[in-house]
Length: 536
Image 1 (cartoon, rainbow, N blue to C red):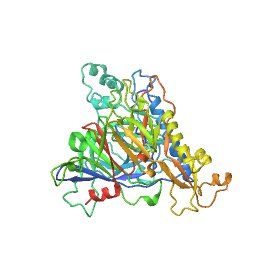
Image 2 (cartoon, rainbow, N blue to C red):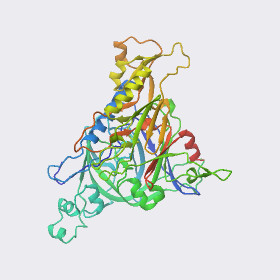
Image 3 (cartoon, rainbow, N blue to C red):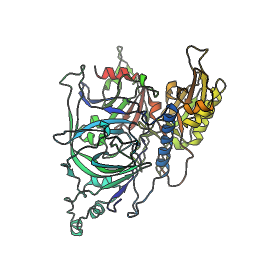
Image 4 (spheres, one colour):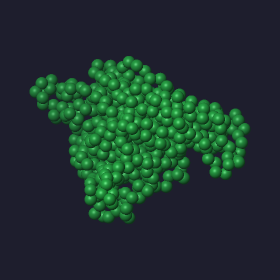
């Protein structure tokens, strides 16, 4: 790394650890009540490099734990040439692990590029050709369209080093220091005449990779999709002028760019809000339940920018009364040190009739920026600190263990627990008997999860290693609790959220991020029907 680069850190935990690859195309829709944009999230489960379900679950579990612990515990690294406090960022690990967003740049775009849509990042960046990705074996295949570097002609304007945008991407360094790094002459710095000097390269580092990029500004285009149920008048391309983004020619283990949807000033919603506050200050998504199974994915999962139906919030009945909103809301927790997080207070987790209270660290954020529970569209499994995870896992295991045999071998190979064996030979319906799970949030908000959102059944037949160690009965199934252990909480200077609500637990709910009202809402939905309704 050249000494002219500046280390950037960003307190962002919306890690990209899912096992979905979803390509987003944009539809800009004007309704009678408000503006909206609808994104079809096309699922494509990535099994590349995975021998079986056990291998896939193990990889996902390990990545989830590693990423969460990294961003919760290591907040104050320092560049050897700069003693300022840095910000820290979390980005995707590998192709096929999250949602991708298709966009194009320039006044006459000739190539589209697909980026991960990440609700934790506060920057839009992508790989530019020529692109050198070190240690990207198994992650980078130029033949795959959505990870192909953009052949960008660099016709865009560099962000000047005295711009607040340049300061934002280089953490808290004052503009004059950035100009000095950019080799701006001393007399120009003293006279505040650095506007002609380009913003220097910045360096992002995270758990398993990093990249070096430069900051640009150009026109960004989001193209509509064709739909038989959408009129020509409704299909409008969205063009954002002077959009700020990063262009990377070098990366370490990070071949795919990111469209940041977090709370920072450089995120896509933040920049979109300058064009249309209605679109930029509110978005939601509804993930169709998949349970790692191809045949469960038949329609796109909708992602909506803006308030697609104001009347959903306040309906008037035929008798003149007000019908409550179908959404239940819990307030976002303010984090003055790390405003990029979308955190809420998780007060308890209920297993059956037993309510397990959480420690204060999951309910609030303290003055050091510690605590809270991130509502994370990127992390696959909900991550809980050890004291909470053990209480939940033990209560769940004690109840289910009375009926089913513990599958210790599966736990070792998947990283999940508790797991159990089930033989449906004498049960044609093949239903598991497991206790319900309810999440209790601040504001008297309780969400009862469908069984498929926290308990996953799969066959042991594809586990060759397991076959060698144990002779399995024909028709035997395995089921596991789909939560992650984030490890012990640490005191001191570490900061960040204490837990994360992963996307596996969010399936089948429309999750609303209301940035204007500082609240997050949940509504149980059939997401495939919501997609149909939005396109009718």
